[in-house]
Length: 151
Image (tube, rainbow, N blue to C red):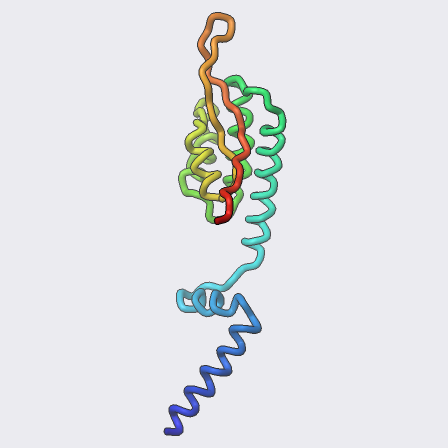
């Protein structure tokens, strides 16, 4: 009987601790696998995410299509920022390493769009075919997506 009372008391006390510190559950779970919560990871994550959002916003406001050379400059700029984000998709880190070693690799819009979805950024890179000087070229646009309406 005394054990039950002590268990209920401990449960109530820990419940109050959980309410006071919203991250306590996260601390507890990380301790199970031998890790500690690191606030710097989240601040770097938000800083890089905002940096990427600024790049995308600037390109979306431009409303001018990007030709092939501009596409690669834009993609490299985005990949460079994405590669410094903690817990980004592993293929972004691999691509960044490959791009640093071989400058011939091209970055496609699909990998950028997957990363934008992963980072929950409301942007999409779209492409269209256009005839420019009797030559068919693929051009990119950065579009800001509207958030879904609340029901």
